[in-house]
Image (cartoon, rainbow, N blue to C red; front, top):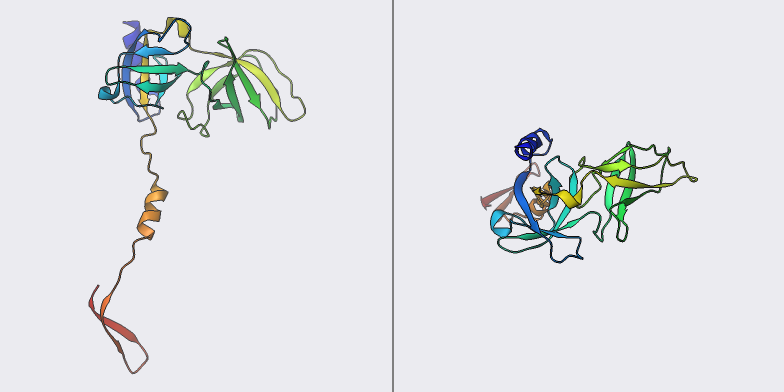
Length: 208
């Protein structure tokens, strides 16, 4: 009941995204950080889609898919970093070997970090929608010249995951600007007779 209530609460998120709820059914092997869910391509799941838990916290992304299942790689084991925001500061999160703690680097920092600072995904992320909660800064960290580095504890407890939600994102991979460029390439050829009047005006008659 608690899990269902949490899933219902996901409707409060500001994302108009398709969602596929899935059960965690196992791991590829005991030494693999990834896990398998019971939804696959026949349910709309695709490689690269972001995955959250029932609280809306970032879990990871889909790494492989079969018709009836998919493998999820958590952010603590992904080879790619995650672009994030801490307040108004943009940074990146990276996993550490054999650790559930994430390393946070903000190269153009303007202020120190405070323990408990909330870390969310940035609009610069290519893997996740903006604004998804990831975790919180673990310790107070002072600026080092114009940069700051710290550690982040994810909100998700990966060892106790039972249900996850796969997001259909991005919703429209073809941008409007790309469509405008396609339309701009369309040319019109006019066939017909050209007539020049006495005042110098040129007119064309015929098919266009």
